[in-house]
Image (cartoon, rainbow, N blue to C red; front, side):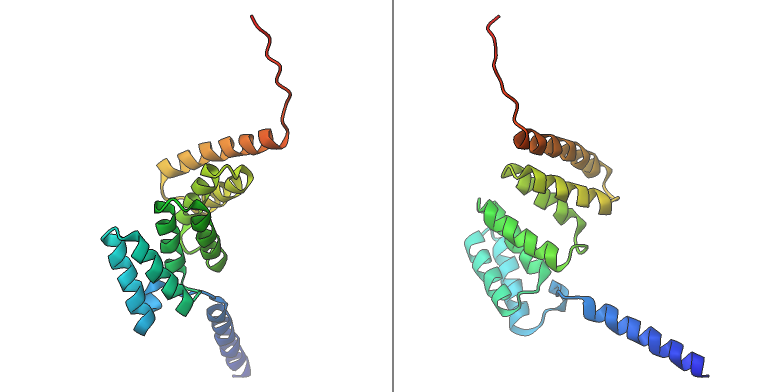
Amino acid sequence: MLRFTVLIFLFLLMGATAFAQKEYLTADELSGKTARLFDRAQEHIEARDLSRAEQALSAVLAEEPAIVDARILLGHVRYERDNRPGAIAQYQQALQLAPDYDQRLWYQYAEILRQERLFAEAATAYARFLETDEQNAVLRKRAEQRLADTRFAADALANPQPFAPEPL
């Protein structure tokens, strides 16, 4: 009987520890004022009022900074508003909060880093996407190619070669 009690205690302790390790919230877990702000932000996005969407999402994150869905949406909005550094910052924070929450976010993050010519960082993000996402064969193939390209670009920028063309 003592063994059984100890096993139950350990099982409950492991479950409580696993629950306590989650350091983020999702949109489904919101309530009250924060949920209303998040819903309003989504309405603004659907209406393509990205300025108001950005304001609403910023207000959501001011209330509760650990809402991963709000960080991801704010990254998307900032990208659409041509604020790539702002999008990168939000994606980084979302990925730090919940690295396994949305595997495609690694791909989106890598794409923006590549566009900003941050090739070494993009290569790392593409590699992480390829480690975790096995669902979309087309996207995986594109990510594999982009990974090779960004690794090459990072190496070329880190090790420039002299170029002295000669006329024919």
